[in-house]
Image (cartoon, rainbow, N blue to C red; front, side, top):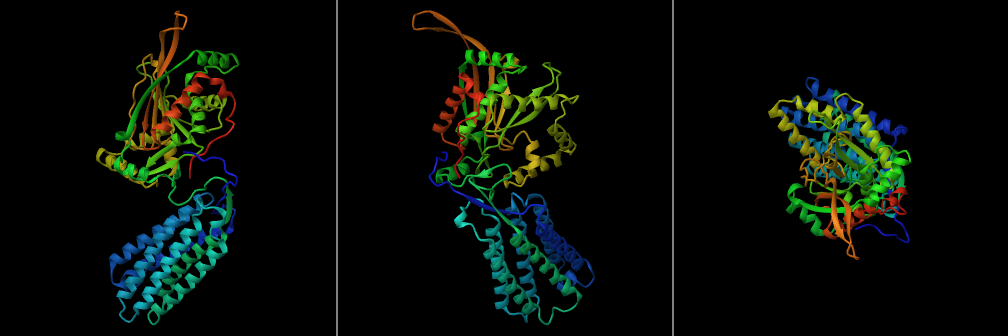
Length: 498
């Protein structure tokens, strides 16, 4: 399920543009100028809709073109350094607008030749494909990555051909201020795309870099066997695809370890810290448990482990509660987990009513009237299905992450089998209960009283097979019964497959 050591490690290439690159800002400027020209063309009397004779055409193409240009500029400003591929979608929508425009212009002028329309459509499609291939290379090795100069040259040739076809298409009916503004808008949009292709810079890594099809909170796994691809459609929802698991561990070694940590100055070090550290270490050796399913696709969080947990300000019926998220790393030790966890808890408890960022967001959403709130949740689910929820929102959401943990031990009861959530993408829910005593018969016939802690796990069975899950559970239990292994980082961190 994971990558093994290779004699020649793969090198992956991607292109990006940081904010210090003047060509990035030039591309943004061209896109915004194209947007301004488009607005002027359609809003001035005698231009756009009046000249074509179809208000519907003007409205539709105005919406597509303007949204695509704003979207393109926004992705350049906020995502171009690490995820330049995100500009491919607005560029594709602008190409769709150009195709609609070319067809409508041809239909409304019988003198125009069909061969020119066909050439224009082919060139627009070629520009769309060239741009898409250029900005999304994160899953390709260095030898197969498209060359920036070659891509830019092909784009220039396609652009020149498109300009020539445009000239002959509009010849005889393309003069005047309206035509200049309209054609200028198209030219500026083309210059924006060309500035990206010329100005993007190459970066390399020994791990796959982001590319089209990835989410902002996960990398799509593309090398799974066909059965996995079919299974997510046969079992499309998370809750019906869940498996329940129950086990326990003998906690004498863990108790001694916790006392050692407290004596060393780690106040209130407890089972929650130990459990989170054991889970992070398990992910470092069994990375497939850090996958999730979204939109009928399998994704890996790689080295980002997001754990959600509910905390109460005080243990009373009236005590307020909130949900915090702890961000762990496969290299974390028990001490780093302790620091990260306590930092999040302290930040939450400093507020008077445990008002975390999620609570504030939930409060705003709760102001929406019932019927519209239902539509809002549906809209959020739809955006999440296609991977378009912004990263700041998925970070606030406790339903997006690697694991949800709940402690029944502080309540003095056994662990529950907690359900998963169809909203979001958390693939596992872990609960652990209070200590229990059990009398065991030794080999010499004497009776020994031992302490155990039960834990339950509810997992999304689609992220990996049962054998892999069993191996991960055994490893997790091994760390809980021999916690000193968590004092040092792992010797090696195993990465998930491509």
